[in-house]
Amino acid sequence: MPATSTSSAAGSLAGRVIVVDPGHNGANGSHSSEINRQVDAGGFKKACNTTGTSAAGYAEHQFNWDVATRLAALLRSRGATVILTRPDNNGWGPCVDERGRTASTNGADAMVSIHADGSSASNHGFHIIHPAVVANHTDAIVEPSQRLAGLLRDELVASGLSPSNYIGRQGLNQRGDLGTLNLAGVPVVMLESGNMHNSGDLAMLRSAEGQDRIAESIVRAFEGYFA
Ligand code: ZN
Image 1 (cartoon, rainbow, N blue to C red):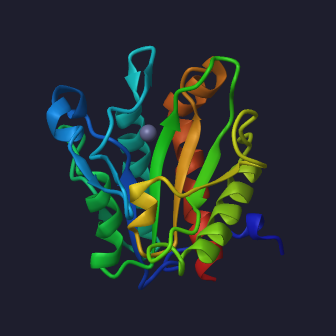
Image 2 (image 1 turned 60 degrees about the horizontal axis):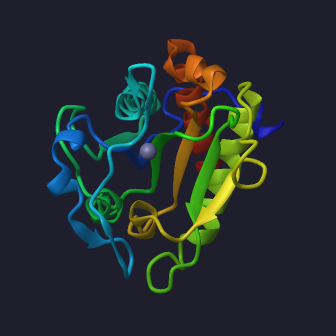
Image 3 (image 1 turned 90 degrees about the vertical axis):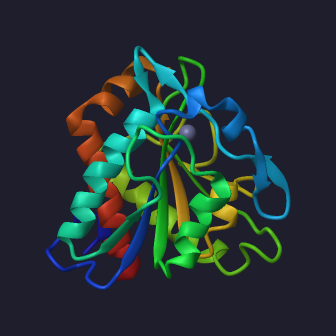
């Protein structure tokens, strides 16, 4: 049976600890000095955090929070323990180093970071960023993260979403410059769920149905990963 037809069942993620990182935060924009502070991103320095993108009055941090909320509830209903990297959408930060280390310091089994992109209006589709080799940081997680990324790509495609037409290859993009990924210490992927500056993607991203499809795809990817 192909992995994409696996149905989510109660208890399918029992005993698993999963970190859900909703990218950015609602008050980052009013805390520029705090979020521009340089922090360790895996052997080099990078800004603590950024504001994220937005379109038509809908901010990326809100989208990330909306999907994370749905995802956390679904994962818990399957028996997983879920750790969110921020408690609400009203504060600033945490910085990327703290986001990544949330996974390793809590003994998590895996981590997903939720984002949406802001690119040219004709660009569309999702892409999944997975860690490149960053010596002494990601050596042990490159391979399992790539497997998790492939499973997530397949689940998103099965649920009707299109891979990016402007970045990466077949919906996957490997990067070594992201502190959240470099410091996670556990299998991790960052989902850029779509391009908020593309009208078709935006309609999907801000709809309850689209957000459910994304959250359910992530759950099925974890189920496949841990099966
Ligand atoms: Zn983002």
